[in-house]
Length: 382
Image (cartoon, rainbow, N blue to C red; front, top):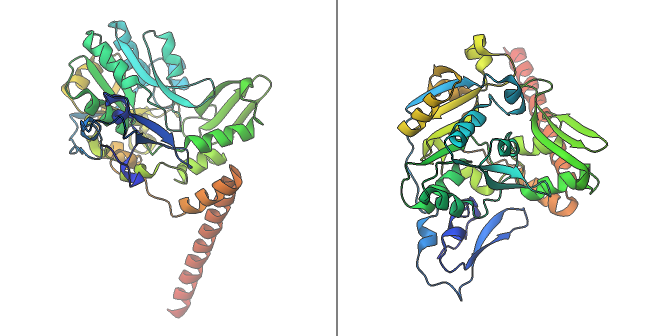
């Protein structure tokens, strides 16, 4: 049976929970807000299925891509609403046009993130845009399998570990399944997001109308977090927003993100999509600061799907796509400030972000001062 003794060896994909024939595995949220499986040993029949679908117990080898593209959705309105170049919407609409089903991440009524599916183009609105907190997969692997067995085409999007979990859960290849991995820096704690949202809304989430982690009013490169309420709009650039900084500085990531089982195409996904950061330095002719996606094509199925959609494509190298977006090939770094953050979070809640960032910035200034002093002394000695 599944037994998580070392938290970095569990990504919370929920494959074990959904595959259990006795439904004796459930998720428990730990003090940091992450879900981990717990087995009811009285009901367990030791069938071993939970171990057979675990990404960490069944690692896959990295895969070389078929091709890599820089791409832009020609519909500028959709592109501006999207985090990157709007490629997800085009892929999803093509599947729905074939009578298919699309799975993705959306907000629930409490503004936490969950996986769900839609059979309509209108339903794609809730999936559009990055959501920087770990989503709850729920029973979407089971639902996806039901649609696949019915012969419906299914597009399943998610982080690399979620794609690995789905493929292991299914236990076989389906010609009518298209998997789309969202390039992932790491998943922040739902508990930290919950605490931050409670703080900025003063506990009244009912007045929230929309949340956008990647608002482009100041451009794609200068994105900000926007929370639209009935009577107010809360907006901050990601460089100054404390929640976004806690994420980008790796303070509140799931422990397994430093040990990701899905990098370099190891998820087995058909396509990987994400931001083509640095495009202005590599291909300035296609840069307009409104968003550009890269697409890593890992299978012939993925290649065929890209051919079907009407988008502006430029073939690039894998190295160019990774140059400014290293999360394609490597796990997130384990921040040495994360333990400090979590100790503060357990004591002071969301104020821990400010406290830890102050320590981080102070230490950075000290290091810079030391480097300047060292250079000056070195020159004097010469």
